[in-house]
Image (cartoon, rainbow, N blue to C red):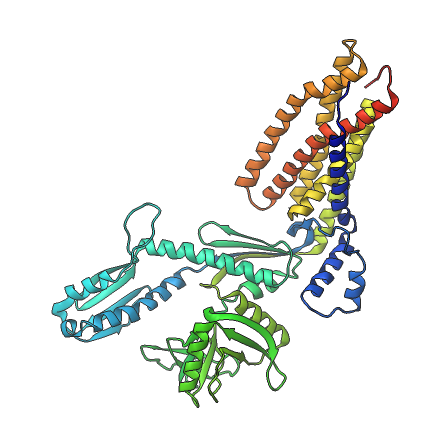
Length: 554
C-alpha cells in the first residue's frame, strides 16, 4: 500500500501554503514596494505626506512584505567602474614618517648635527644632517625605526628602506609595504563606498572588487551614473588647520611645513595653512544637515573624545585667530575663533544648497576615502530597458509554462494535471525563497527561471515512466505507484545533484549576471525535487485513497 504518513502530509501542506504566502507580495510589486518605503519612513521618525499615508494603507502590515529585489538590468540604474589611486597613499605614508624620524634624529643632535628635510620626489623622503661624518650612524638610527610588515610568504620585510646619498639620508617605502598599502586601501575604499551607498537608502546595490585596484558599483533604481558619482566620487577628506595668512597670489610659495589651498566660495582667494591638521574627519562620529543662525543650509558635526579634546584645546588657546575648514584640498570657510568651543561639536557653513548639505553630511558620516578614485567606466541604464526586459521575461515564462502544461496533460492525463499543479507551486516556492534570502533577480536569473520550468517536470516524467513499467508487470496500481517513486528516486537525485554542482561552480567562480543565473537555477533545482517527490506524490496518494481504482492509466 502507498505510505504517506499524516505528519508528512501536514508538513508538505504547511510548506506549500507558507511559500504561497511569501510569494504573494510579488504579484503586487509596486503597491508593496511603496508601502515598504512608507513604513521605513515611519520607523525613521519622518513625517508622512498624503501619498505616503495612502501607500502605507495599500498593503496590510500583517501580511508578508518581502519582495524579490530586481537587478540593474531589470530596474534600471547606474553602473560605475572606478580605479583606486593607491599612489596617493604612498605620499601620505612618507609624509607621516617625517615627524617621527625628525624627532628621532634630533635626539642624536650632538652626533649628527642639524636635521633638515629637503625637497624630493613625492614617493621618497630626503633628510640632510649637519655632520656628514655621522651618516652611517644616522642611517642606522633611521633604519632601526622601521617596522616589520606582515607577509603571507613568511619573508621578513620592513615598512621602509633607508640608504645614504652624500650627506643625505633617503627613505623610501619597501615593496612589501606598498603591497600592504594597496590591499588595505582597496578594502577600506570598498567599505566606505558601501557605507555611502547604503546611506542613500538604495536597494540591493552590487559593490565588489575587480582585480587589484578596481571597484565595481551597480546601484538599481538610482537616476544616473552622475548622481552615483556625486555620492562615491568625492574623497570627502575633512580637516581643520591653523591659518598662517590669506593671499590673492596663486603663485605664493608655502613654507616647508605649510600648504596652500584655494577658497571654495571666494574666487581668487588662497589660504596658506599649517600642513599638520589640528583634527581630521577621521575623528568625526556624526554629521547632520542643519541650518546656521541666518537660516542657510549648513552641516553640524560632532567629534569623538580625542578629537573633541584637541578641538576644544586649540580653540581655547587661539581665540581671535582664523581657523580653516578644508574639504578635499579646498577651504570651505575660515571663521575667526570667537570663544572656546567645548563639547567637540560645531557647524560647517558655506554657500550650500539643501541638497549639497545633505550629501556632504552623508559623505562625512560614511567616512573619507583613503585615496582618490578614477572613473574608468560609467553607464546609466534607463528603467524603460528594464521594463522591456521584464515584459520579455514574462512572455518567455508564460510560453514555457504553457507548453509544459499542455505537454504534461497530453502525455499523462490526470497524472499530468497533478504535475502541472506542482509546477505552479514550484514557481511560487522559488519566488518565496528569492524574497526570503534577499536575492536579486536579474535578466539571466529570468533565464534560469525559464530553464527551471522545463526541468521541473523531469522528475515527474521519470516517476511516471517508472510507474508505467511497473504496471506492465501485472502489479496492482498501489504497488506500481509506490515502486515508481522508490525506483526513480536515485535517478532523480543523481540528475539534480550534478546540475546543482554546476550551479554552485557558476556561483563561486562567476560574478554579476552569472551569479544571478546560478542562484535562480540552484533554488529551482531544490524546489523542483521537493515538488516532484512530495507535492505530486501527496496529490497522487490523496486521489488514490479517495477513488481506490482497480486499475490506472498513466
